[in-house]
Image (cartoon, rainbow, N blue to C red):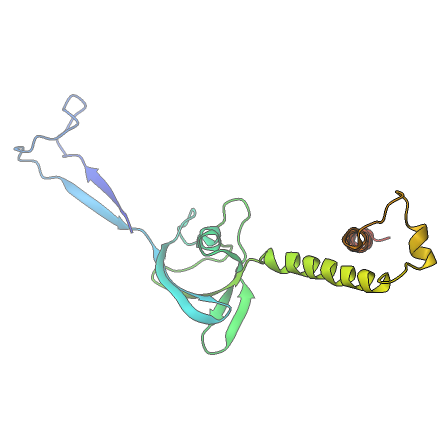
Length: 190
């Protein structure tokens, strides 16, 4: 990646000398180059791939931590795991939520195999809800096809007929709210 350069001042320089050196000056400028530590990352998605092989610079105080949050954001993963191509997925790679760096340290020049778990799509739950509404609507339509039963006539609160899709939505919303309330109460220990 990048290198850090440091210039050493000549031995006979004092504070009154100019900061920029004269190109015709007989003084030699010494420079020190420091290599930024890097690891090679082989990235898999659900055990298939590798989808990408790249070098990632290590960061942190000791420059031995991997930038996990950057990898998650770039590839759309919700989590990454240690991975061995022969045997599969291992332990999850934990990271600090504040700075996004791994809690484990890595050596410069190592090869790291990671397996990513993609983020959940919103299409799946929306599809389930829409198909549920359609199924319950079809059941209500078939149940009240000819003449509505007595219990259906009693549901007629507005003086008009309630469309079946509204009844289906009410059933689904009621069921989901009841489940969330039960989960909430179980988490609180009641």
